[in-house]
Length: 413
Image (tube, rainbow, N blue to C red; front, side, top):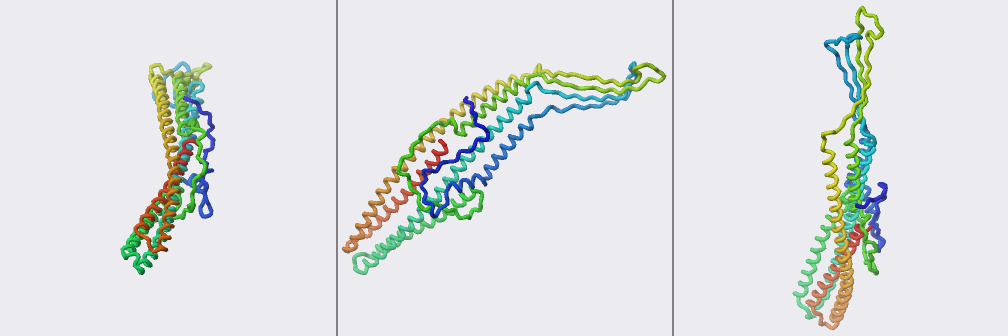
């Protein structure tokens, strides 16, 4: 297991959105929303409080065992050469073996360091959630705009169809089919509108604010012209794996503490016994009180728990090594899938651009056909459906691309 020397004050590495070529004239930067979420999120505050509690346990560990005080009164006063004893006072303090308190503090600190990684991981995951929700909002908004555009296009075709009916070049059925198609598109738009309201609630709650607050989403989201290059696939510094390193280190500290605690305890104390003077006696120590310093030693001779704890620590370290390897395999798989999906989204996007252009060319041909009076409104509907399909697929490709980009950032930054 590798040691990690990252200081606990290491700053969280936020996601780099340099590839996001936003047109922000009508939209708020995603980074602004992310910063607001990180600042206001109850989940992040929860993990920070856990870290604060774990850090405070370092102070808790810097303590000594309780000091024992006792007092006793002799109901039947025992006679001694110097006089009868009246009462007894005792005080005793046990001390752990040398270095035990330091070992206990180091163990508590290692646990706090592990808890700190939970804060880092929670922040990264929150960034992913906010970003994904933001892209969902963009997708829903962009699809509504496309549906509105296609609705207006069908309106234009309807006008052409009505004119054709008057000249006998089209039937009323063609007009009705165009109107029914408009109804379908309007239905889809209204459904997306409701989904947008629901997703806006999700987004606002991630930022811990009122669910009805307006979210300024970018109007246009383009894909970068250059392919993204994954320069570094080294997961050594990923917080999910650093956490396992720190867990491993905490068990090392636990074992050091275990070795210290199996040492003897040393105790120091004092007994004070009050003595009454003997009547009619005259000697030097008559009635002299007794003061007796004491030293104690507590040795765990028959205690096997320390050996058992050592064995448990060894097994825990082996388990953590396997857990880390398992998580590394998962992260590497997720990265490979994300890169594949990102490239696929780019291919899909470029394909839809070509399809959309060809659909527009077909649309122009149909419009020119209308000028000769030979327009076929069945072809009009077919082309419109294809155009809408291509436009929707293009938006989905953009969404998938940036979603995979977000996952890649989570895994590699």
